[in-house]
Length: 391
Image 1 (cartoon, rainbow, N blue to C red):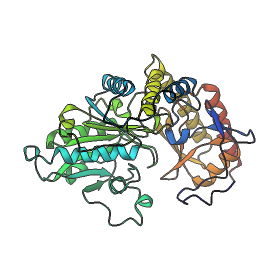
Image 2: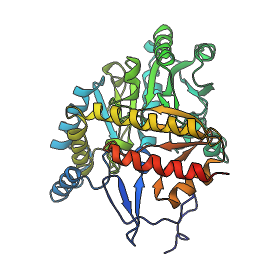
Image 3: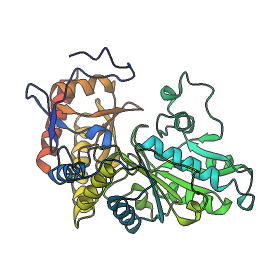
Image 4: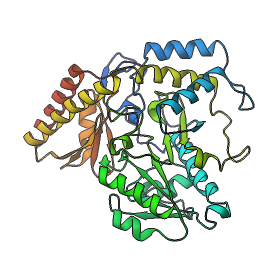
């Protein structure tokens, strides 16, 4: 097999994956891998979950696409369920996290395009280390220098400040500031967790200055921290939230959620998506909610997250020359390495454990939310073996 026909924008490993089941992935020769990367926090319910497979097969036999000139039963049900389970009053469905973030950015600007809301407010405060996707607007908003390199001129309208620094945020606010865009946990940025005080402070600053607060929950949302959204740990209510990855468990699906106040600025023709809200995606999204909103699901995620974090901290204690720090919340965890992390990721792959590198020399440990204690023990044993081999 060859990858020479593909645009070389990914550092692909030599592993070829043919199928998956639960927390495991399989190569064509039958080699089994323990998946603690989850497609970068996408496969929240693991691989080939029978309930999701059945929902997709059933919908595939009925209807694939009708365009957004019409509604479908799955669309109406999915939207109503998300509204009932969240702060939101209105939902826009799309296909990727980048699209959801684009929608949120446009919503902020559209809201303030009315003179009655403060004409001239069009700038958004963002954060160093942030990552919001790959479109021009998303890399302009984000703080990932590798993603930004070579794409000048970037889009204007974003003012970047240090993550976690409330004083810097307040200094950056001007008469032209319209909103604040932040991740409750910076995934790509190195699993850096925003403190409760920081998120609460952002909400207070937004209220004080008449700004909109937008939370990017693409990686940290959909149950990964033991709550539907990571910002819920801070007890705040945002104006806009973007979600993707786990919401479709691998099927292209994302959403931008908003309250009525902000949503009122959007009217027919102001935004759209050809494939957004297609019947296949709605069927999968509803099936994901069936599992996630079941009683006890999030409590189990918290329990497994606590067990995994405890095990990682024990490894840090045993191998301080290898693991410098353990970060994260729930089942979105990271280990900041004291040695180069890419080589360590490769060593784990050799031992059939899949993880995901991030910025700040961090390795993300993000298993499916259906992981059990046996899987965690196996992963920790592999990590310990590789730590022991480090000179």
